[in-house]
Amino acid sequence: MRITFASLRQQNFAALLMKRLWLVFAQSVTVLLAAYFVVATLRPEWLNRKPSLPMIVPVLESSTPPGDGAQATTAGFRSAAQAASPAVVSINTSKATETNPQTSDPWFRFFFGDQGQSQRQSGLGSGVIVSPAGYILTNNHVIEEADQIEVLLNDGRRSPAQVIGTDPDTDLAVLKVDLQSLPVITLGDSDALAIGDAVLAIGNPFGVGQTVTSGIVSALGRTQLGINTFENFIQTDAAINPGNSGGALVDTNGHLMGINTAIYSRSGGSMGIGFAIPTSTARSVMEAIVRDGQVTRGWIGVEPQDLTPELAENFGVPPGTGVIITGVLQNGPAAQAGLRPGDVITQVAGKSVNNVAQLLSAVAALPPGQPASLEVVRKEGAQHLQVVPGRRNLPRQTNGQR
Image (cartoon, one colour):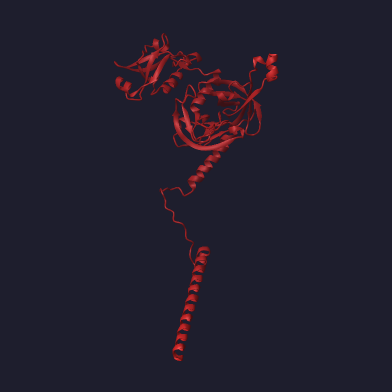
C-alpha cells in the first residue's frame, strides 16, 4: 500500500509540474507576441522593416499627380475671389412710406395715435463696379422706388449713388458714384460658359457683409420663369441669398459671368437653385443706358405661340423649329410686311428662333426703323419678308404682343 500511495504522489507531482511549465510557456509566448506586435506597429524600423502603407487603387489614370487638381481648384477659387471681390459693393437703399391720409382726423389720432410722421423703409442689395468712371451694375428691384441710395465699397469707403437708368424688362439698373481709384471687375464671355463650369457668387447676403460662395453652372438659357420679360438665365447651385441681388457671378479667373438676380426657395434661403443674368445681356443693357439713358428695343406687333409637335407636322417643319403666329396687330409692322396668323417664323435677321423667348429676344434686338428679314414657313412653302420694326414701349408689353 505504501508503494502504491508513493507512486500516486509522484504521478500527481509530475502532472502538476507539467501543467505549471505549460502555463509559464503559454504566458511567455503571449507576452512575446504582444511585444512584437507593439514594436512592429509603432517602431517598425527596430525590426529593419518599412512601415506598411494602405493600398490605393486608382479609379482613372491621369498624368496629373494626386492632389494637384484639388490644389489648382482651391488656388483658382482664391485668386478669383481676390480679383473680383474688391469690385463688388453693398447697396443700402431707403424710401419714405406713404402717410395715411386719415392721420389728420382727430378721432383717428385719438384711437391710433399720431402717425403723421412718415417712416422710412430700408433695403439691402449688391452691385458690381464695371467702369473706372464709377458705373455700377445692379438689379432694378434693388433700387426701385428708392429715394436714397448709398454704396459701400469693400475697402470701407461710402458714397451716395446716382441712378443713370433702369431696365425693368431685364431687371437691370446702372448707378454711378463719384469716387477715385475704383476697383473694376473684368467682363467675361458668358456665351462661352458650359454646364459644369465652376463659378463663385459674391454679394452681401442678409447684410452680414461680403460673402463668397462656390458652385457650378447647373443650366443655361433658363426661360419662362416669370421673373422678367426677357429671360435667359444662368442657373447655378452657388448659394445665393437675400441681399445677393445685384452681386457678381464670376468664373475661376474672376471675370464677371452674370448678375445674381433671383433664387427658387420655399424658405427664403438658398436651396441650390439660383439665377443670374448673363454678362452678354447686362453689357448691352448697360451700354444702351449709359449712351441713351434707356434701352430701345424693336417691336413688330405679333402674338406668338410655341410650335407643338402636331402643328409642326402640319406645317412640315421639324418639332421645336420656329414659332407660330396666332395674331397680328392691324396696321402694325408685321401686318405691313405681309405676316399673317398661322405663319411660322423660323428666323429673324438671320438668327434662328425655336421658341417664344428666342423670338422675343431676336425682335427686341432689331433697331427700330431699320428693315430686317423674316424667314416664314407657310403651307405653300418658305418665304422671306422684310419688316420695319417699330419701337417697343411699356403699353404694348401688357397685351402679349412682340
